[in-house]
Every structure is written in C-alpha cells, then in structure tokens.
View 1 (cartoon, rainbow, N blue to C red):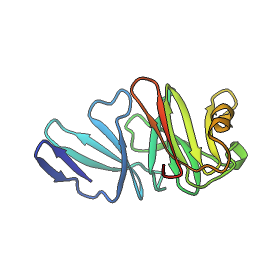
View 2: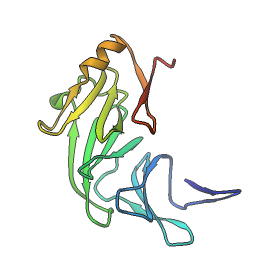
View 3: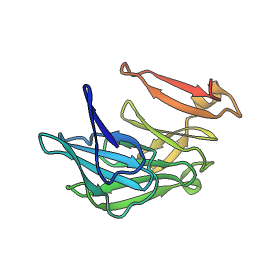
Length: 173
C-alpha cells in the first residue's frame, strides 16, 4: 500500500495487497483497508499515515468494504459470501461477526460485491442484485432491477454516482 500526495509517494510498511479503502464515519484520521489477509487500520498522526495493524478476529480477503447506516461494516468475499462486522471503538477488534450466504437469501456465493447506495446495502453476485433488509436481517432479491436487466447476466460492477444514481456494468460491457 502506497500513499500518494501530489508528486510524492511512500510505502506503508507491513501492508500486503490492498483492495479498497474507506474512512469510517466519525474517524477523521483513520482509514480501514481491505487486503488479501483481512482489514488493516491506517492512522494519520498529522504528518504521515502508518499501519496500526490488522483488525483482530477477521482474516478473510476483503475486496469490498462499506459501512451501513448503523455503522456496521460489510465485507464481500469472492466465493465465501458476505460478512457484517461490528468493531470496537478503537477499530482494532471484532465485537460481532455475521456471515451471509444461502440461508440469508443469497442464491450464489460467487463473485460477491457489496456497495452502499443511498444508505442502503446493495449486494451483487452471479445471481443478480440484492438489497439488505434491516427488518428481517436478510438479503432480498432486487426484483425490479433484476427483471429489467434480465436473466443469465453477470454483474461486474455497481457504480454509485454522487447524484443518487448508479451504473451497472454487466458481462464486461
């Protein structure tokens, strides 16, 4: 993982394979990074970013990370489903973890991705689009959008725009 600031860059030691980075709500000088080996906590001491280490209790590859309206974190794994985790105040340890798979409404565990759109958790995989249902703690198929896209479509990416709209990239198109 490298920090790029203008024309300068520097490597953050002890980081391997960064996928994505998010700034948790309410933490001005902290960034969580999804890596091949779990989630790292990066902190800015006012001069530089440094690696505080991995979040204890979670060592899954974390390609996509989003934070929901309840300030819990969602992590997608390419072939193991989705994880919802609660972190302690220091963001260095897991308080609670829940795995979402077939029993929680996902028909496929492959090519999972998670996004935050308009304060809703959106999930995509080989079987289509899903919305997280907070009331039932399940992933519900997004029938309207799945019908519009059609069957046998692989969703490659769900791109959120700043004006509450989105793009869906399908079948590498």
